[in-house]
Length: 76
Ligand code: FES
Image (cartoon, rainbow, N blue to C red; front, side, top):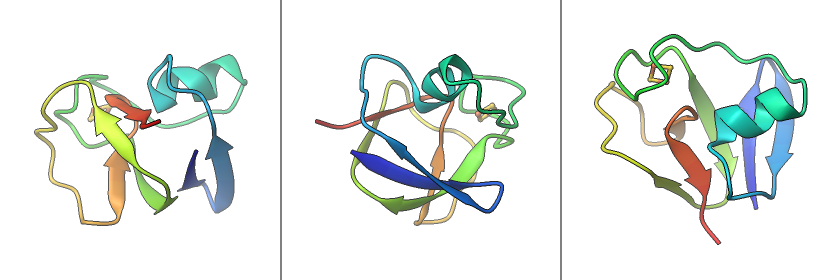
């Protein structure tokens, strides 16, 4: 289970079949994105708790407590 901060809201993700961005879209939760490829950094969110795994190498700059939700899944 992963918790992220998105638009001043704490959101819990307990699904690892999709990227976090895809999961949010399925839930009808709006999130910023552009490249969907780990390059631009537009989708960066603060990771509050939990472990994530990237489905590809993140290329955008992020801080230690941030996650690129377009290429990240929750780690079970
Ligand atoms: S949308 Fe570009 S890094 Fe995620």
